[in-house]
Length: 474
Image (cartoon, rainbow, N blue to C red; front, side, top):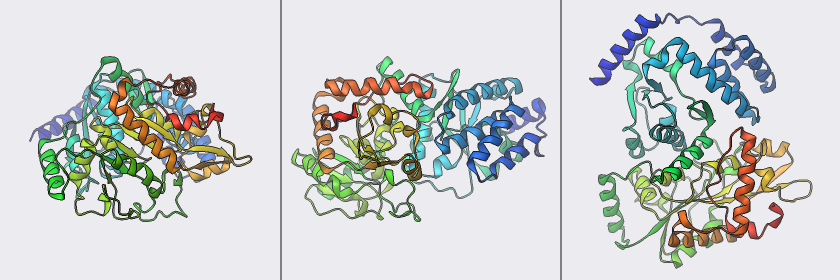
């Protein structure tokens, strides 16, 4: 009822104030569509660059160029990103759309990969921390929309107004096109526009400054009670503590295999984690291997629950275990974000996409993959790893074209990272002393953040064992 009244009021305001007669394509829209259909990416960038000169006050043109540069891993994207933010803000004021006090997010951010929710969490945190003007957030859901995990989606409903797209009229749909935030790539905040991992970094900086609890959500009572009941019936002691582990493998996406994966740098061999699993179990804990049935079955180890192939598995348990675990041993996948929503620390292992580092919190631990040069098999230095364009590589061919390859973390490296996290938790990850090399790592990372046009802070320490055993990284 409230949404219906709001929509009617909004539609009336749009028609009376702006006379939204843009049902035909404008010249700029036509030019953008033509540019989208260009297959050669370099040619597309050239055409879009020319369009930014032709339409210097049109934010959509700059966004199209930004998307193309991002897919190319082009460092100039950060300059275009800032320009897009300024032009968008001015355009909203000039047209009066800023008076509506509403913003939209694409439905596929909720119905697509569970990792997409991280971008929404960034938006929520930035709004709550006062880093940007807080507005009503809407999403138009298609008919029969299916969420990857309905249980975690329930936590986002406090901040997002869900509307059925079939109940909205053409003007409302057009408003969505105009006011949708590109949160899967960047987020406009006060006086600037930042890459989404940089937004997470800025949020962590603000929370550290204000000494705030950095959990976005609190586990719902119903989810807690159901989770405890299931674990008890499964035979876990009431005082049991546990760790969640998620190791990305090809197979979740139906068409992805080891041979054709373009993002193999995100996949890892779960068997390499067995040594670390045994350390957790020998320390008195349990390990829940998270995931889906497409994953490689784990060996039978007392204290290891292969949850991905377990009758325990459910959407609520996915959330419950994430929220109540001591920490998460994760890789570059959507699941490792879930524990973070509830303030649970993460070991971010096997990472070959260094830009993701900036999204980590102070209580997390970083275990990157070593990136080597094909010509001599030497490690590239931290300063190279954290600089553009290497830090922006998202596809296998980008590493290949640069003459680089990555090396998965060894069982020993993962084991030592778990040992360090267990020690950090005993003290409190927020207050742990860092080694000389860890301090040096953070200094190098912060110095190289200027590559992105903004000074960023290095919150999470890098695993001490990795640094000690690879002195040439410095």
